[in-house]
Length: 105
Image (cartoon, rainbow, N blue to C red; front, side, top):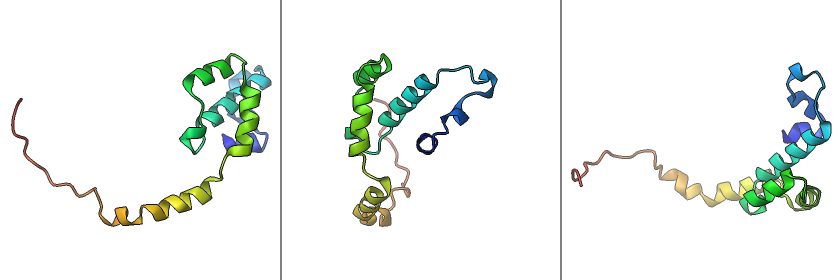
């Protein structure tokens, strides 16, 4: 969705059966809300109450503008996070032995 938004190709997401019978402004707004809700850093994501206000037409433009200045590119952040957990990967938690429970409680 982000790539289609950046390339101004949101129309590709719309059901072909609608035959261009949809509100392009509303599509843009819904995509902006979706992108705000899926930002990489959870602290940058809006609260549900803010999402509801944005869907009602209150504050979306300001929040969208602010998000365009704040968002960190994912590739740089992911590289830092990968190094942070290298020691954890070596001790895999996937190998788990079965254990017997003490019985009904």
